[in-house]
Length: 124
Image (cartoon, rainbow, N blue to C red):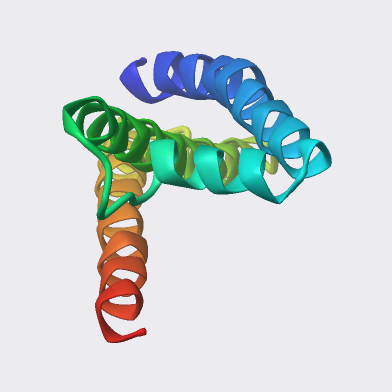
């Protein structure tokens, strides 16, 4: 039940928040280099920025991590539903195990993705 509800929530979150972030990125890209630099400074990193940019950096990273988790949660939950559509896994123990695996896999995939991103950001 939890995985099914999370599937719906993450689908809506990806559609709404993801689309808004994508449109903001495209708008900043289309507006020119200064706008794009300001967008990146607000969302990702601005070493010369003040307190406002520090807050937006934190909020931007929270949104990006949330979108990453929503993507993996929705992906793994969709794969679980695909298996259920084949008729497999309707036994209660198997279904519960797959539900736990979906949640854990989404968390692990999100952590692995962000560890890789932060490692690359520190090295490059």
